[in-house]
Image 1 (cartoon, rainbow, N blue to C red):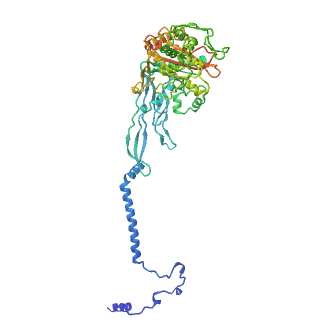
Image 2: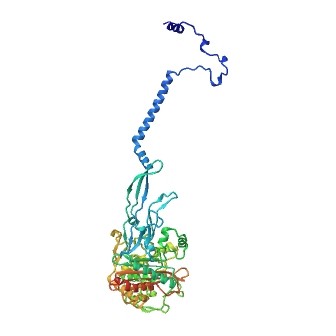
Image 3: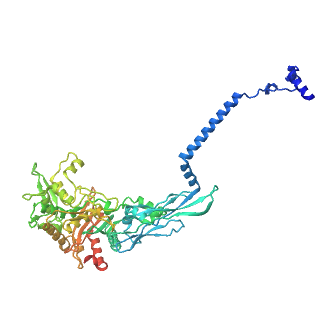
Length: 567
Protein backbone atom coordinates (compact mmCIF):
# COMPACT_ATOMS: atom_id res chain seq x y z
CA UNK A 1 0.00 0.00 0.00
CA UNK A 2 2.84 2.35 0.84
CA UNK A 3 4.39 1.63 -2.50
CA UNK A 4 1.11 2.37 -4.33
CA UNK A 5 0.82 5.71 -2.67
CA UNK A 6 4.32 6.71 -3.65
CA UNK A 7 3.62 5.69 -7.20
CA UNK A 8 0.48 7.70 -7.39
CA UNK A 9 2.15 10.63 -5.81
CA UNK A 10 4.97 10.67 -8.24
CA UNK A 11 2.58 10.17 -11.16
CA UNK A 12 0.05 12.84 -10.38
CA UNK A 13 1.46 15.32 -7.85
CA UNK A 14 5.16 15.69 -8.41
CA UNK A 15 6.45 18.04 -11.05
CA UNK A 16 8.71 16.50 -13.69
CA UNK A 17 11.37 18.68 -15.18
CA UNK A 18 12.11 18.57 -18.89
CA UNK A 19 15.69 17.65 -18.27
CA UNK A 20 14.48 14.50 -16.57
CA UNK A 21 12.88 13.41 -19.81
CA UNK A 22 15.16 14.64 -22.61
CA UNK A 23 18.77 13.77 -22.65
CA UNK A 24 21.25 16.45 -23.36
CA UNK A 25 23.04 15.77 -26.56
CA UNK A 26 25.91 17.78 -25.34
CA UNK A 27 26.41 15.43 -22.39
CA UNK A 28 26.55 12.29 -24.54
CA UNK A 29 29.85 11.76 -26.20
CA UNK A 30 29.98 10.65 -29.87
CA UNK A 31 26.32 11.49 -30.41
CA UNK A 32 25.72 11.37 -34.23
CA UNK A 33 23.16 13.91 -35.27
CA UNK A 34 23.65 13.01 -38.95
CA UNK A 35 22.07 9.66 -38.19
CA UNK A 36 19.13 11.37 -36.47
CA UNK A 37 20.30 10.21 -33.04
CA UNK A 38 18.63 12.07 -30.30
CA UNK A 39 15.48 12.85 -32.32
CA UNK A 40 12.10 12.48 -30.70
CA UNK A 41 10.29 9.32 -31.92
CA UNK A 42 6.57 9.67 -32.15
CA UNK A 43 4.25 6.65 -32.18
CA UNK A 44 2.42 5.79 -35.48
CA UNK A 45 -0.87 7.52 -35.66
CA UNK A 46 -4.17 5.70 -35.75
CA UNK A 47 -4.99 7.13 -39.20
CA UNK A 48 -1.80 5.76 -40.69
CA UNK A 49 -2.59 2.28 -39.47
CA UNK A 50 -6.03 2.47 -41.02
CA UNK A 51 -4.60 3.73 -44.32
CA UNK A 52 -2.05 0.92 -44.51
CA UNK A 53 -4.72 -1.60 -43.70
CA UNK A 54 -6.89 -0.34 -46.54
CA UNK A 55 -3.93 -0.54 -48.96
CA UNK A 56 -3.09 -4.10 -48.01
CA UNK A 57 -6.75 -5.10 -48.14
CA UNK A 58 -7.12 -3.64 -51.64
CA UNK A 59 -3.96 -5.40 -52.86
CA UNK A 60 -5.22 -8.66 -51.43
CA UNK A 61 -8.56 -8.28 -53.15
CA UNK A 62 -6.83 -7.56 -56.49
CA UNK A 63 -4.53 -10.57 -56.09
CA UNK A 64 -7.35 -12.93 -55.16
CA UNK A 65 -9.52 -11.61 -58.01
CA UNK A 66 -6.73 -12.14 -60.54
CA UNK A 67 -6.11 -15.63 -59.23
CA UNK A 68 -9.80 -16.41 -59.56
CA UNK A 69 -9.84 -15.15 -63.16
CA UNK A 70 -6.85 -17.29 -64.10
CA UNK A 71 -8.32 -20.31 -62.38
CA UNK A 72 -11.82 -19.98 -63.80
CA UNK A 73 -11.10 -18.68 -67.31
CA UNK A 74 -7.66 -20.01 -68.18
CA UNK A 75 -7.11 -22.75 -65.70
CA UNK A 76 -7.59 -25.54 -68.24
CA UNK A 77 -5.24 -23.88 -70.73
CA UNK A 78 -2.46 -23.52 -68.20
CA UNK A 79 -3.09 -27.04 -67.01
CA UNK A 80 -2.65 -28.28 -70.58
CA UNK A 81 0.60 -26.33 -70.92
CA UNK A 82 1.78 -27.86 -67.69
CA UNK A 83 0.90 -31.30 -68.94
CA UNK A 84 2.78 -30.70 -72.19
CA UNK A 85 5.79 -29.60 -70.28
CA UNK A 86 5.82 -32.95 -68.54
CA UNK A 87 4.69 -35.12 -71.50
CA UNK A 88 7.06 -35.87 -74.37
CA UNK A 89 6.34 -37.65 -77.64
CA UNK A 90 8.30 -39.61 -80.22
CA UNK A 91 6.92 -40.15 -83.74
CA UNK A 92 6.00 -43.66 -84.76
CA UNK A 93 6.47 -43.63 -88.52
CA UNK A 94 3.82 -45.13 -90.77
CA UNK A 95 4.95 -47.68 -93.34
CA UNK A 96 4.50 -46.40 -96.88
CA UNK A 97 2.27 -48.53 -99.10
CA UNK A 98 3.82 -50.94 -101.59
CA UNK A 99 3.40 -50.15 -105.30
CA UNK A 100 2.69 -53.09 -107.63
CA UNK A 101 2.43 -53.50 -111.38
CA UNK A 102 -0.71 -54.97 -112.94
CA UNK A 103 0.62 -58.51 -112.41
CA UNK A 104 1.50 -58.09 -108.73
CA UNK A 105 5.21 -57.42 -109.23
CA UNK A 106 6.63 -55.07 -106.58
CA UNK A 107 7.78 -51.78 -108.05
CA UNK A 108 8.36 -49.86 -104.80
CA UNK A 109 8.62 -51.28 -101.27
CA UNK A 110 10.18 -50.65 -97.85
CA UNK A 111 13.25 -52.02 -96.06
CA UNK A 112 14.69 -51.57 -92.56
CA UNK A 113 16.96 -48.52 -92.29
CA UNK A 114 20.59 -49.57 -92.57
CA UNK A 115 21.66 -46.98 -89.98
CA UNK A 116 19.13 -47.86 -87.33
CA UNK A 117 16.74 -44.97 -87.87
CA UNK A 118 13.15 -45.64 -86.74
CA UNK A 119 11.68 -45.23 -90.23
CA UNK A 120 11.91 -47.51 -93.25
CA UNK A 121 13.79 -46.83 -96.45
CA UNK A 122 12.12 -46.87 -99.85
CA UNK A 123 13.43 -49.22 -102.52
CA UNK A 124 12.54 -49.34 -106.22
CA UNK A 125 12.53 -52.07 -108.83
CA UNK A 126 16.00 -52.85 -110.13
CA UNK A 127 15.00 -52.46 -113.76
CA UNK A 128 15.43 -49.43 -116.01
CA UNK A 129 12.61 -47.25 -117.24
CA UNK A 130 10.54 -46.64 -114.09
CA UNK A 131 11.95 -43.44 -112.60
CA UNK A 132 9.52 -40.93 -114.12
CA UNK A 133 6.58 -43.26 -113.60
CA UNK A 134 7.25 -43.99 -109.93
CA UNK A 135 9.11 -40.88 -108.77
CA UNK A 136 10.83 -40.96 -105.38
CA UNK A 137 10.44 -39.74 -101.77
CA UNK A 138 12.27 -37.54 -99.30
CA UNK A 139 12.71 -38.99 -95.82
CA UNK A 140 11.96 -37.62 -92.32
CA UNK A 141 14.60 -35.15 -91.12
CA UNK A 142 15.90 -34.33 -87.64
CA UNK A 143 17.99 -31.52 -86.20
CA UNK A 144 21.34 -31.69 -84.42
CA UNK A 145 19.58 -32.45 -81.13
CA UNK A 146 17.92 -35.49 -82.61
CA UNK A 147 14.44 -33.98 -82.80
CA UNK A 148 12.46 -34.63 -86.00
CA UNK A 149 11.43 -31.40 -87.67
CA UNK A 150 10.07 -33.26 -90.71
CA UNK A 151 8.15 -36.33 -89.63
CA UNK A 152 6.63 -37.32 -92.96
CA UNK A 153 7.82 -38.99 -96.12
CA UNK A 154 7.18 -36.57 -98.98
CA UNK A 155 6.36 -37.97 -102.41
CA UNK A 156 8.38 -36.40 -105.19
CA UNK A 157 7.48 -36.82 -108.85
CA UNK A 158 5.47 -39.59 -110.48
CA UNK A 159 3.11 -41.89 -108.61
CA UNK A 160 4.85 -41.23 -105.28
CA UNK A 161 3.73 -37.62 -105.60
CA UNK A 162 0.35 -38.04 -107.29
CA UNK A 163 -0.94 -40.70 -104.89
CA UNK A 164 0.94 -39.63 -101.78
CA UNK A 165 -2.24 -39.36 -99.70
CA UNK A 166 -3.12 -42.99 -100.39
CA UNK A 167 0.27 -44.62 -99.84
CA UNK A 168 1.64 -42.31 -97.11
CA UNK A 169 -0.47 -43.46 -94.17
CA UNK A 170 -0.56 -41.49 -90.91
CA UNK A 171 2.16 -41.35 -88.29
CA UNK A 172 1.48 -42.30 -84.69
CA UNK A 173 3.30 -41.29 -81.50
CA UNK A 174 4.69 -42.70 -78.26
CA UNK A 175 3.81 -40.46 -75.29
CA UNK A 176 5.81 -40.61 -72.05
CA UNK A 177 6.00 -38.50 -68.89
CA UNK A 178 9.15 -36.84 -67.59
CA UNK A 179 10.01 -35.42 -64.18
CA UNK A 180 11.44 -31.98 -63.44
CA UNK A 181 14.91 -33.20 -64.36
CA UNK A 182 13.80 -34.59 -67.70
CA UNK A 183 14.01 -38.21 -66.64
CA UNK A 184 11.48 -40.56 -68.17
CA UNK A 185 8.99 -41.99 -65.74
CA UNK A 186 7.81 -45.55 -65.99
CA UNK A 187 5.04 -46.27 -68.45
CA UNK A 188 4.04 -44.72 -71.79
CA UNK A 189 0.98 -44.40 -73.99
CA UNK A 190 0.94 -45.42 -77.66
CA UNK A 191 -0.93 -43.79 -80.51
CA UNK A 192 -0.24 -46.40 -83.20
CA UNK A 193 0.50 -45.36 -86.80
CA UNK A 194 -1.88 -46.09 -89.64
CA UNK A 195 0.12 -47.66 -92.43
CA UNK A 196 -0.35 -46.51 -96.02
CA UNK A 197 -2.46 -48.44 -98.50
CA UNK A 198 -0.88 -50.45 -101.30
CA UNK A 199 -1.22 -49.23 -104.87
CA UNK A 200 -1.63 -51.30 -108.03
CA UNK A 201 -0.69 -49.70 -111.33
CA UNK A 202 -1.90 -50.45 -114.83
CA UNK A 203 1.61 -50.94 -116.23
CA UNK A 204 3.17 -54.28 -117.09
CA UNK A 205 6.70 -54.08 -115.70
CA UNK A 206 8.02 -56.50 -118.33
CA UNK A 207 6.85 -54.35 -121.22
CA UNK A 208 7.85 -51.13 -119.47
CA UNK A 209 11.44 -52.34 -119.08
CA UNK A 210 11.70 -53.75 -122.58
CA UNK A 211 10.32 -50.60 -124.20
CA UNK A 212 12.85 -48.51 -122.30
CA UNK A 213 15.70 -50.80 -123.35
CA UNK A 214 14.60 -50.56 -127.00
CA UNK A 215 14.52 -46.75 -126.84
CA UNK A 216 17.94 -46.58 -125.17
CA UNK A 217 19.44 -48.99 -127.69
CA UNK A 218 18.14 -46.98 -130.64
CA UNK A 219 19.31 -43.71 -129.09
CA UNK A 220 22.82 -45.08 -128.68
CA UNK A 221 22.94 -46.50 -132.21
CA UNK A 222 21.54 -43.47 -134.01
CA UNK A 223 22.63 -40.59 -131.81
CA UNK A 224 19.27 -39.54 -130.37
CA UNK A 225 19.36 -37.28 -127.32
CA UNK A 226 16.35 -38.86 -125.66
CA UNK A 227 13.07 -40.62 -126.19
CA UNK A 228 9.73 -41.67 -124.77
CA UNK A 229 7.21 -44.43 -125.31
CA UNK A 230 3.66 -45.31 -124.29
CA UNK A 231 1.28 -48.22 -124.84
CA UNK A 232 -2.39 -47.71 -123.94
CA UNK A 233 -5.49 -49.88 -123.75
CA UNK A 234 -7.85 -48.06 -126.13
CA UNK A 235 -10.96 -49.32 -124.33
CA UNK A 236 -10.29 -47.84 -120.91
CA UNK A 237 -7.14 -45.68 -121.11
CA UNK A 238 -4.96 -47.95 -118.96
CA UNK A 239 -1.30 -47.37 -119.74
CA UNK A 240 0.51 -50.67 -120.15
CA UNK A 241 3.80 -48.79 -120.40
CA UNK A 242 4.98 -45.21 -120.02
CA UNK A 243 8.69 -44.54 -120.03
CA UNK A 244 11.10 -41.71 -120.68
CA UNK A 245 14.81 -41.66 -121.53
CA UNK A 246 17.13 -40.57 -120.00
CA UNK A 247 16.06 -41.01 -116.41
CA UNK A 248 17.46 -40.63 -112.89
CA UNK A 249 17.98 -43.22 -110.15
CA UNK A 250 15.17 -42.71 -107.60
CA UNK A 251 17.19 -44.49 -104.89
CA UNK A 252 19.97 -41.91 -105.24
CA UNK A 253 17.59 -38.96 -105.04
CA UNK A 254 15.73 -40.41 -102.06
CA UNK A 255 18.80 -40.81 -99.85
CA UNK A 256 20.56 -37.71 -101.14
CA UNK A 257 23.91 -39.23 -100.18
CA UNK A 258 25.51 -39.56 -103.61
CA UNK A 259 26.17 -35.86 -104.12
CA UNK A 260 28.29 -36.47 -107.22
CA UNK A 261 25.52 -38.35 -109.03
CA UNK A 262 22.91 -35.76 -108.08
CA UNK A 263 25.18 -33.00 -109.30
CA UNK A 264 25.60 -34.79 -112.62
CA UNK A 265 21.82 -34.92 -113.04
CA UNK A 266 21.49 -31.22 -112.30
CA UNK A 267 24.28 -30.22 -114.66
CA UNK A 268 23.13 -32.35 -117.59
CA UNK A 269 21.40 -29.58 -119.50
CA UNK A 270 21.77 -31.47 -122.78
CA UNK A 271 19.86 -34.67 -122.01
CA UNK A 272 17.84 -33.26 -119.07
CA UNK A 273 17.12 -36.48 -117.14
CA UNK A 274 14.51 -34.86 -114.88
CA UNK A 275 12.08 -34.23 -117.77
CA UNK A 276 9.39 -36.85 -118.22
CA UNK A 277 9.33 -36.66 -122.00
CA UNK A 278 6.18 -38.78 -122.22
CA UNK A 279 4.03 -36.02 -120.72
CA UNK A 280 6.22 -32.92 -120.31
CA UNK A 281 8.16 -32.91 -123.56
CA UNK A 282 6.64 -30.90 -126.42
CA UNK A 283 7.84 -31.78 -129.91
CA UNK A 284 7.21 -30.99 -133.55
CA UNK A 285 5.10 -33.96 -134.69
CA UNK A 286 5.81 -34.10 -138.39
CA UNK A 287 3.79 -36.55 -140.47
CA UNK A 288 2.02 -38.32 -137.58
CA UNK A 289 -0.67 -35.60 -137.81
CA UNK A 290 -1.57 -36.62 -141.36
CA UNK A 291 -4.23 -39.21 -140.39
CA UNK A 292 -6.11 -36.49 -138.51
CA UNK A 293 -5.88 -34.03 -141.41
CA UNK A 294 -7.16 -36.81 -143.68
CA UNK A 295 -10.10 -37.49 -141.34
CA UNK A 296 -10.98 -33.79 -141.45
CA UNK A 297 -10.90 -33.77 -145.26
CA UNK A 298 -13.13 -36.85 -145.42
CA UNK A 299 -15.56 -35.60 -142.80
CA UNK A 300 -15.88 -32.23 -144.56
CA UNK A 301 -16.39 -34.04 -147.90
CA UNK A 302 -13.61 -31.98 -149.42
CA UNK A 303 -11.84 -34.86 -151.16
CA UNK A 304 -12.68 -38.23 -152.65
CA UNK A 305 -10.24 -40.64 -150.94
CA UNK A 306 -9.86 -42.56 -154.21
CA UNK A 307 -9.00 -39.55 -156.34
CA UNK A 308 -5.37 -39.56 -157.50
CA UNK A 309 -3.14 -36.51 -157.51
CA UNK A 310 0.15 -36.64 -159.30
CA UNK A 311 3.18 -36.21 -157.04
CA UNK A 312 6.19 -34.90 -158.96
CA UNK A 313 8.27 -34.10 -155.88
CA UNK A 314 7.07 -30.54 -155.34
CA UNK A 315 4.08 -28.27 -155.50
CA UNK A 316 4.72 -25.02 -157.38
CA UNK A 317 2.49 -22.06 -156.55
CA UNK A 318 2.68 -18.92 -158.77
CA UNK A 319 2.77 -15.59 -157.02
CA UNK A 320 -0.54 -13.85 -157.89
CA UNK A 321 1.13 -10.45 -157.82
CA UNK A 322 4.40 -11.43 -159.49
CA UNK A 323 3.79 -14.41 -161.81
CA UNK A 324 7.48 -14.72 -162.56
CA UNK A 325 8.07 -15.51 -158.88
CA UNK A 326 7.04 -18.94 -157.71
CA UNK A 327 6.80 -20.62 -154.30
CA UNK A 328 8.01 -24.21 -154.26
CA UNK A 329 6.79 -26.63 -151.59
CA UNK A 330 8.88 -29.76 -151.72
CA UNK A 331 8.08 -33.35 -150.91
CA UNK A 332 10.49 -35.36 -148.78
CA UNK A 333 11.00 -37.61 -151.82
CA UNK A 334 12.72 -35.53 -154.46
CA UNK A 335 11.50 -37.54 -157.47
CA UNK A 336 7.94 -37.71 -156.15
CA UNK A 337 5.55 -40.60 -155.61
CA UNK A 338 3.57 -40.62 -158.84
CA UNK A 339 -0.20 -40.87 -158.79
CA UNK A 340 -1.38 -40.90 -155.22
CA UNK A 341 -4.71 -41.44 -153.49
CA UNK A 342 -5.35 -41.04 -149.76
CA UNK A 343 -4.27 -44.53 -148.67
CA UNK A 344 -1.02 -44.31 -150.62
CA UNK A 345 -0.48 -40.79 -149.30
CA UNK A 346 -0.67 -42.17 -145.76
CA UNK A 347 1.45 -45.20 -146.60
CA UNK A 348 4.29 -43.26 -148.20
CA UNK A 349 3.70 -40.03 -146.25
CA UNK A 350 3.29 -37.95 -149.40
CA UNK A 351 3.66 -34.30 -148.43
CA UNK A 352 2.30 -32.85 -151.67
CA UNK A 353 -0.95 -34.78 -151.27
CA UNK A 354 -1.53 -33.20 -147.86
CA UNK A 355 -0.59 -29.78 -149.17
CA UNK A 356 -3.41 -30.15 -151.69
CA UNK A 357 -6.17 -31.42 -149.37
CA UNK A 358 -5.30 -28.89 -146.67
CA UNK A 359 -4.75 -25.62 -148.54
CA UNK A 360 -6.08 -26.52 -151.98
CA UNK A 361 -4.40 -26.59 -155.37
CA UNK A 362 -5.79 -25.75 -158.80
CA UNK A 363 -9.30 -27.26 -158.95
CA UNK A 364 -9.02 -29.12 -155.63
CA UNK A 365 -10.34 -27.31 -152.61
CA UNK A 366 -8.58 -27.67 -149.26
CA UNK A 367 -10.12 -27.87 -145.79
CA UNK A 368 -8.27 -24.76 -144.62
CA UNK A 369 -6.38 -24.01 -141.43
CA UNK A 370 -9.52 -23.62 -139.30
CA UNK A 371 -10.61 -27.20 -140.03
CA UNK A 372 -7.10 -28.53 -139.51
CA UNK A 373 -7.21 -27.03 -136.05
CA UNK A 374 -10.78 -28.23 -135.48
CA UNK A 375 -10.11 -31.89 -136.22
CA UNK A 376 -6.73 -32.19 -134.58
CA UNK A 377 -8.16 -30.64 -131.42
CA UNK A 378 -11.16 -32.96 -131.65
CA UNK A 379 -8.76 -35.86 -131.08
CA UNK A 380 -7.21 -34.18 -128.06
CA UNK A 381 -4.06 -32.91 -129.74
CA UNK A 382 -2.54 -29.82 -128.05
CA UNK A 383 -4.87 -30.33 -125.07
CA UNK A 384 -4.23 -31.87 -121.69
CA UNK A 385 -5.21 -35.53 -121.61
CA UNK A 386 -5.98 -35.62 -117.88
CA UNK A 387 -3.34 -38.26 -117.15
CA UNK A 388 -2.91 -38.89 -113.42
CA UNK A 389 0.72 -37.77 -113.30
CA UNK A 390 1.76 -34.18 -112.59
CA UNK A 391 3.63 -32.12 -115.16
CA UNK A 392 1.59 -32.52 -118.35
CA UNK A 393 2.24 -29.87 -121.00
CA UNK A 394 -0.17 -28.64 -123.68
CA UNK A 395 1.59 -27.94 -126.97
CA UNK A 396 0.30 -25.84 -129.85
CA UNK A 397 -1.59 -26.01 -133.12
CA UNK A 398 -0.77 -23.18 -135.55
CA UNK A 399 -3.71 -20.93 -136.39
CA UNK A 400 -4.42 -17.48 -137.74
CA UNK A 401 -4.94 -16.16 -134.22
CA UNK A 402 -1.75 -17.80 -132.99
CA UNK A 403 0.32 -16.27 -135.79
CA UNK A 404 -1.10 -12.80 -135.27
CA UNK A 405 0.09 -12.93 -131.67
CA UNK A 406 3.38 -14.63 -132.42
CA UNK A 407 4.26 -12.59 -135.50
CA UNK A 408 2.32 -9.30 -135.40
CA UNK A 409 1.82 -7.76 -138.81
CA UNK A 410 2.62 -10.95 -140.71
CA UNK A 411 -0.58 -12.33 -142.31
CA UNK A 412 -1.46 -15.99 -142.57
CA UNK A 413 -0.25 -17.43 -145.87
CA UNK A 414 -1.05 -20.48 -147.95
CA UNK A 415 2.37 -21.90 -147.18
CA UNK A 416 1.57 -21.76 -143.46
CA UNK A 417 -1.41 -24.03 -144.07
CA UNK A 418 0.70 -26.42 -146.13
CA UNK A 419 3.38 -26.70 -143.47
CA UNK A 420 0.85 -27.11 -140.66
CA UNK A 421 -0.80 -30.00 -142.54
CA UNK A 422 2.43 -32.00 -142.42
CA UNK A 423 3.07 -31.28 -138.74
CA UNK A 424 5.64 -28.54 -139.10
CA UNK A 425 5.65 -24.77 -138.58
CA UNK A 426 4.52 -24.04 -134.97
CA UNK A 427 2.99 -27.46 -134.32
CA UNK A 428 3.88 -28.86 -130.87
CA UNK A 429 2.52 -32.03 -129.24
CA UNK A 430 3.34 -34.44 -126.42
CA UNK A 431 3.70 -38.22 -126.74
CA UNK A 432 0.81 -38.87 -124.34
CA UNK A 433 -1.48 -36.71 -126.50
CA UNK A 434 -0.58 -38.73 -129.56
CA UNK A 435 -1.16 -42.14 -127.95
CA UNK A 436 -4.59 -40.91 -126.88
CA UNK A 437 -5.35 -39.48 -130.34
CA UNK A 438 -4.33 -42.59 -132.27
CA UNK A 439 -6.23 -44.67 -129.73
CA UNK A 440 -9.38 -42.78 -130.71
CA UNK A 441 -8.68 -43.56 -134.37
CA UNK A 442 -8.20 -47.25 -133.52
CA UNK A 443 -11.42 -47.44 -131.49
CA UNK A 444 -13.34 -45.50 -134.14
CA UNK A 445 -14.05 -42.50 -132.00
CA UNK A 446 -13.62 -43.33 -128.31
CA UNK A 447 -11.44 -40.66 -126.70
CA UNK A 448 -10.37 -41.99 -123.30
CA UNK A 449 -8.22 -40.66 -120.45
CA UNK A 450 -4.76 -42.20 -120.13
CA UNK A 451 -3.99 -43.24 -116.55
CA UNK A 452 -1.63 -45.40 -114.48
CA UNK A 453 -3.63 -46.13 -111.30
CA UNK A 454 -5.59 -49.35 -111.66
CA UNK A 455 -8.34 -48.36 -109.20
CA UNK A 456 -8.68 -44.74 -110.25
CA UNK A 457 -11.94 -42.98 -109.45
CA UNK A 458 -14.09 -43.34 -112.60
CA UNK A 459 -15.32 -39.78 -112.16
CA UNK A 460 -11.81 -38.61 -113.08
CA UNK A 461 -11.97 -40.34 -116.45
CA UNK A 462 -13.58 -38.99 -119.59
CA UNK A 463 -14.92 -41.20 -122.34
CA UNK A 464 -15.95 -39.05 -125.27
CA UNK A 465 -17.48 -40.39 -128.45
CA UNK A 466 -16.29 -38.47 -131.50
CA UNK A 467 -18.82 -37.89 -134.24
CA UNK A 468 -16.92 -39.18 -137.28
CA UNK A 469 -18.38 -41.43 -139.97
CA UNK A 470 -17.33 -45.02 -139.52
CA UNK A 471 -16.45 -45.34 -143.20
CA UNK A 472 -13.92 -42.54 -142.79
CA UNK A 473 -12.16 -44.49 -140.04
CA UNK A 474 -11.99 -47.49 -142.35
CA UNK A 475 -10.06 -45.49 -144.96
CA UNK A 476 -7.58 -44.31 -142.34
CA UNK A 477 -7.16 -47.81 -140.88
CA UNK A 478 -6.39 -49.25 -144.29
CA UNK A 479 -3.90 -46.50 -145.07
CA UNK A 480 -2.14 -47.00 -141.73
CA UNK A 481 -1.93 -50.74 -142.30
CA UNK A 482 -0.29 -50.03 -145.66
CA UNK A 483 2.33 -47.95 -143.82
CA UNK A 484 3.54 -51.23 -142.30
CA UNK A 485 3.10 -53.57 -145.25
CA UNK A 486 4.43 -51.36 -148.05
CA UNK A 487 5.34 -47.94 -146.70
CA UNK A 488 7.58 -46.18 -144.22
CA UNK A 489 6.86 -48.47 -141.24
CA UNK A 490 8.29 -51.74 -142.49
CA UNK A 491 10.11 -52.31 -139.19
CA UNK A 492 6.72 -53.16 -137.67
CA UNK A 493 5.83 -55.81 -140.25
CA UNK A 494 6.10 -58.95 -138.12
CA UNK A 495 4.41 -62.31 -138.60
CA UNK A 496 2.90 -62.66 -135.13
CA UNK A 497 0.52 -59.71 -135.25
CA UNK A 498 -0.80 -57.20 -137.77
CA UNK A 499 0.05 -53.64 -136.80
CA UNK A 500 -1.21 -50.36 -138.26
CA UNK A 501 0.99 -47.29 -137.91
CA UNK A 502 2.03 -43.86 -139.07
CA UNK A 503 5.61 -42.67 -139.00
CA UNK A 504 6.80 -39.10 -138.84
CA UNK A 505 10.03 -37.18 -139.14
CA UNK A 506 10.16 -33.56 -138.06
CA UNK A 507 12.97 -31.14 -138.74
CA UNK A 508 13.93 -29.20 -135.63
CA UNK A 509 16.18 -26.30 -134.78
CA UNK A 510 16.85 -23.12 -136.70
CA UNK A 511 19.34 -24.82 -138.99
CA UNK A 512 17.06 -27.84 -139.60
CA UNK A 513 20.08 -30.11 -139.12
CA UNK A 514 18.38 -32.25 -136.49
CA UNK A 515 15.25 -34.38 -136.53
CA UNK A 516 12.70 -35.93 -134.22
CA UNK A 517 11.39 -39.33 -135.23
CA UNK A 518 7.92 -40.63 -134.36
CA UNK A 519 5.76 -43.66 -134.80
CA UNK A 520 2.13 -44.00 -133.69
CA UNK A 521 -0.21 -46.90 -134.28
CA UNK A 522 -2.33 -49.73 -132.92
CA UNK A 523 -2.65 -53.52 -132.77
CA UNK A 524 -4.06 -56.02 -133.52
CA UNK A 525 -5.18 -54.47 -136.79
CA UNK A 526 -8.39 -56.47 -137.23
CA UNK A 527 -9.55 -56.04 -133.62
CA UNK A 528 -7.69 -53.04 -132.20
CA UNK A 529 -7.00 -53.16 -128.46
CA UNK A 530 -3.77 -51.25 -127.84
CA UNK A 531 -2.38 -47.96 -129.15
CA UNK A 532 1.27 -46.95 -129.03
CA UNK A 533 3.54 -43.96 -129.49
CA UNK A 534 7.32 -43.81 -129.59
CA UNK A 535 9.25 -40.56 -129.89
CA UNK A 536 12.98 -40.33 -130.54
CA UNK A 537 14.34 -36.86 -129.84
CA UNK A 538 16.99 -34.88 -131.68
CA UNK A 539 19.24 -36.89 -133.93
CA UNK A 540 21.41 -35.62 -136.80
CA UNK A 541 19.28 -35.21 -139.92
CA UNK A 542 21.55 -37.65 -141.75
CA UNK A 543 20.23 -40.45 -139.56
CA UNK A 544 17.87 -42.86 -141.34
CA UNK A 545 16.93 -45.08 -138.37
CA UNK A 546 13.58 -44.01 -136.96
CA UNK A 547 11.35 -44.67 -133.98
CA UNK A 548 9.62 -47.57 -135.73
CA UNK A 549 12.79 -49.60 -135.12
CA UNK A 550 12.33 -49.38 -131.35
CA UNK A 551 8.65 -50.31 -131.50
CA UNK A 552 9.41 -53.16 -133.89
CA UNK A 553 11.98 -54.55 -131.46
CA UNK A 554 9.42 -54.44 -128.65
CA UNK A 555 6.73 -56.08 -130.81
CA UNK A 556 9.01 -58.99 -131.66
CA UNK A 557 9.85 -59.45 -127.98
CA UNK A 558 6.17 -59.34 -127.02
CA UNK A 559 5.37 -62.02 -129.61
CA UNK A 560 7.66 -64.37 -127.67
CA UNK A 561 7.21 -63.31 -124.05
CA UNK A 562 3.87 -61.48 -123.84
CA UNK A 563 1.74 -62.92 -126.66
CA UNK A 564 -1.46 -62.32 -124.69
CA UNK A 565 -1.41 -58.71 -125.87
CA UNK A 566 -1.71 -59.85 -129.49
CA UNK A 567 -4.74 -62.07 -128.97
